[in-house]
Amino acid sequence: MGDLTVQLEQQIQHAYATKTPLKIRGGNTKANLGRETSGEAMDMADHSGVISYSATELVVRARAGTKISLLNDLLAEQHQRLPFEPPSFAGEATIGGTVAANQTGASRPWFGGVKDSLLGLGLINGYGEVMQFGGQVMKNVAGFDVTRLQCGAMGSLGLITDVSIKVLPEFKAGHTLTFDMTIEAALEAMLKWANLSLPITGMSHFKGLLYVRLQGGAGGVASASTFLGGEKLASKAAEIFWQAIREGSFLQPRHDQTLWRWSGASDTLANTVPNTSLINWAGAERWVLTEALDTPLEGLVQYQGGDRLAEVYGAISAPQQALQQRIKHAFDPHGILNAGRLYAWM
Image (tube, rainbow, N blue to C red; front, side, top):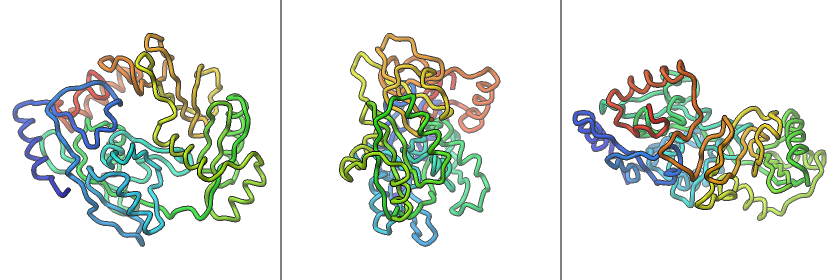
């Protein structure tokens, strides 16, 4: 545990000189994401630790290998939280991997994704140059676009060394309501309720039930609960449910199955994404389990299982591909950083 920036910088410089591909990993909790790749291991797990934390300024800065569970515990001591509610994957997920994979929990429609809380980050590009983008306050926007560009890049545009994140106070009260509904009825209800001024922080549909999470001040939560009706879920059961949503543990494909993820407009009709097993983000995220040999619908991303040597993300237009290749070349001219993780051509 500590600052390994110099060693990481030297490893990338050597890889650049020898054109050696590097395979970046932290807690190794996201091995199922993206395409299967190969290369010399670049382990980030020991490049960890909180660099600074100001509870009054609502900002924490930590090295990439710092575990999400450690950050959650640190923030909880000051009654604060990470706004994007990331998965911890049995305590092994790291903040660097979370940013690189752009992973958020059920509250995304209301509190934004990783990029919305990311103030700045440190990066080592494919030349082995240490770079810093953004800052530690929201008004400092120097390099902000580059900071956001790293969210979801899966390490292909540089090695994230540290991140600065805006945090928020914990909720004073909260509980979960359930409603017996079909997918069609649930999508209609979610669309309606999401447009009301209610303290909703999660809406998901699973196995015939719509789950609505309310969090905020005690008075607001109580009023919203009375207005919506439904059945109040026991606190422990609610905690288990939303943890499973966050950690993605509800849908575990068998060896002969593939788990697909769809993300789009929340008002998209149910039959647009048939055989949906789980709906999250008030309709904007949907999950589909198929047999491994089934042909998926356009727009689905292969999340877990299936052939990971083939493309797992949907095809993009030729102009978009050309733009992404230019960006990749600017950050990583020899293509040594997680080569092919997003697309075979990147």
